[in-house]
Length: 347
Ligand code: AMP
Ligand code: ZN
Image (cartoon, rainbow, N blue to C red; front, side, top):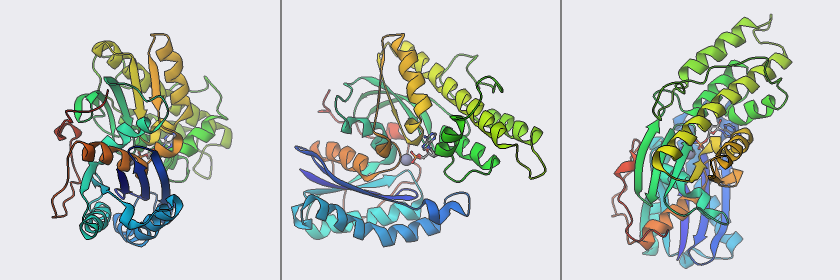
């Protein structure tokens, strides 16, 4: 089955073609980062308008890349939530209409299920059950995954998401949006041990997270070392970035180990934009190896928003017979636990 995947939930237009026999055939991504950078965050109406302009040309691009025509498609999968309502409506409207015109099924995909299943696009994907750490710009969650649609939320952030914390810390040091990759790059030049930032909520039991205290601590440190231009010197910024990243990574690692122990599992997948973070991957690999557990993640391109994860997740649901009725519906706020489980999820 050849599935066209369409992702437009936020500020990336991601389009991909996934073949359930041959794997990924083509994928294309257009990032709106430059469009939003001068505002320091995503402007919803600008995002919707840009998706309108980019979605159809990118669909044509992936079809050309795969040497296929629209008529060769067997189904369409589009992100139906959670996300920005206007942005979601663009992908859903185009995806559902295309499926109607071609007389093929369409399925609305949960964006976070897409992220969660992205590591399945790699060689040697993990078998169920496993723990998933979902760390993106909008979510920080630990989920027990017993199959596709069999999700048990074990813990989540009570305030900012990990990616959001990276973005806000970056803004404090006048780094561009999205700040995660900039903090990560700056941290490489940081001096270990110059600053020690708190690891919130690690000293009490449970699997929830909180990053707002760390954000305040970062702001206080930046302010304390600010020079006449309002910013600390370059080396101090690098040292702050290092301490900030170390604290976020340290916190995530402690909670992942705790979740694996609690559930008696040995496999962890990390997904979402922050899972591209090299320090997080390295620390998790080292710490989990000590308990005989393994870490799985997607290639960096498929950690942030992309069409491939939507095509893949949609294909699994389509194979199980799930399709969308004709009315176009999106769900800007959508708990992943409410998704229907797939009986025949492979394991
Ligand atoms: P998503 O919401 O899954 O599209 O991911 C976007 C979020 O991931 C943003 O908050 C980024 O700052 C963050 N992010 C992307 N790459 C990295 C990285 N290398 N380190 C830390 N955060 C990152
Ligand atoms: Zn995302």
